[in-house]
Image (tube, rainbow, N blue to C red; front, side, top):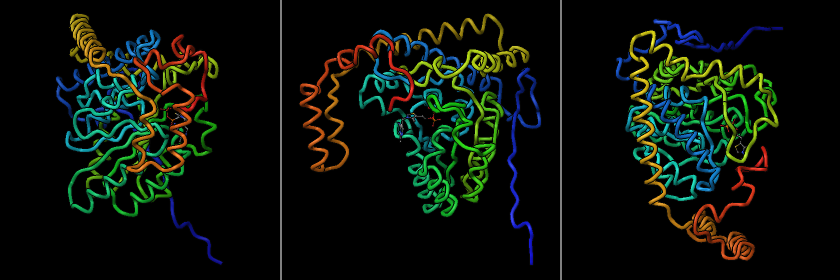
Length: 381
Ligand SMILES: Cc1ncc(C[n+]2csc(CCOP(=O)(O)OP(=O)(O)O)c2C)c(N)n1
């Protein structure tokens, strides 16, 4: 009888900037001072956009909105490693990543107003994907295309820890590995999938190890450390551009609600939230930049003022450009010719909603949503 070990695997964890804001020079990427401050500005811009968007939703100006509070380092650190001409494929929580790609805030707000135009942001960025775990397949397709065309470019796709329970995500990683697709799978493990905790999602010790079965590399990084994330993503993209896909697991935390229809107090403790507040990515990075002499109170006040101005202008622009939303139209864009079943669903929808047309998102919302969401967690948006 023969018994021998035929394969062995391990998963590396990477951190450049620790919780005390001390930098590990060996891991940190070489970025100039201006770029470092820009990362900080983008993270603050995203945090403030989220705050204003939630307030707008509470006043009935937006439909559903998914804030990325707490995940700014994971998104800004990674999206800035992608070249401007490379494809970014987001899920529905990638506001910070899209801002880092130059997306105008009014478009993100239009999306939350139910307007199709909101999905069209500048550059090679896919529209948000609401069906959980579906978009990694699209990214694998883009990455395979790059391999066939012999182009040294890669695509990067974002998804959550919950999405890794979907078969599509494995299929995407498997096909990417088999076909040398130029793709980075970027999982933001924010510890929760609506009300399902990470521990109930999988028995696996890490999400990164889910790469093993696909024969691709998996790596874990401190997702609240923008410099560690940038370094890991830069290396992953370098590998992907040569036809070796990578799965990155960024360990982070969704500090706010799942969406504006959710109330996390129902399913998690204040102690847990406080624990992660202490590891907030913006506070840590700000501390580092202060220690390096790149930020002080005056510079921070300047950045704050500039951000407030940009967001105020963008909100005005979003309101001015708001269009009538016709929810029944969603049935028209599934197939070139609607199937009989879709036609039936559309008629039923129109019958039940009296035509399905709303003049503003506010009128289209239920009383509960207008009031800020009486319904909690588990909803299907
Ligand atoms: C296929 C599918 N199933 C269920 C839902 C409802 N849903 C929306 S978000 C979500 C949880 C997603 O969790 P995760 O992938 O961890 O991403 P996060 O929301 O934490 O960013 C669920 C179940 C959906 N949109 N699509």
